[in-house]
Image 1 (cartoon, each protein chain N blue to C red):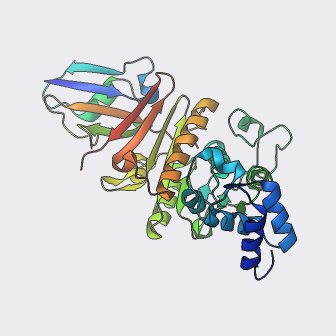
Image 2: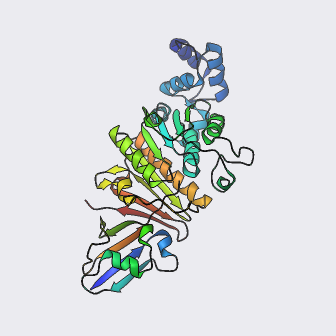
Image 3: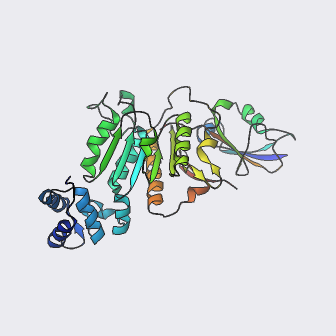
Length: 74
Length: 272
């Protein structure tokens, strides 16, 4: 299945802004985070098709999956 | 300030001394001195009569809008990078009362981004420095400084609260406090080239709870560039201003993500 992965803020550094990925059925949101070498502790918000999701959420064909880091400075 | 302010006397003095539709600080201060009342009372009445203080004329707002700002209290929680910039902008805008809360003093590592931090005031309490500097920008400004961690007194009677904290846990506590008092909370956060701004409670759900849900604190203080702070604080104050003036906001269904490295300004719209 095809899923578009979008990265934000410093998650883009050394990676990409957005990328279409061919993924096996059953791939979870957390698997992509791990494959990208992103520390789960640094993840702030995960969204699929503009709705919040969790690491355990299973991606579907055509999903747009966005990964935002925790931004916490004031 | 006199116990009973001579409203009628202020009115007469304004009608006598003000020509055109603006009032200079010198004239307003002169009336206040002459009648032993506060500058704030004179300028508030001037706005009611349609005279704009000259330091606010380039805002281009109507007298009614400027009066709404003058009669509003904004609480700023955290007076570091974002909070200091917000305080400065809100004073220039003409907000009449700022409650500022921060337990910390300025340190050398604040010099890169905190507008009121200088080599002259290192180790000084942040709120004390702001309380000294802000009236030089907006002399009619009432300031309530709290040199401590925030509590319910830090948001008392405020029209809007500014979240300029640097801890997810503290942000969530502030969100709960504002929610219990039904006060809108404008959230912002910065890191390196990146920032975000949003209004906490929205119809698509709680913003701060969603963004800091995992109880994770940053392992070390984030790096923050001064340009990011200036940009994000400006966006945060724009949201405060729109809330006070009832202008509405496109951020009521998500948040705005900013990226100065890629020059992106990305509204994130959440679906219901």
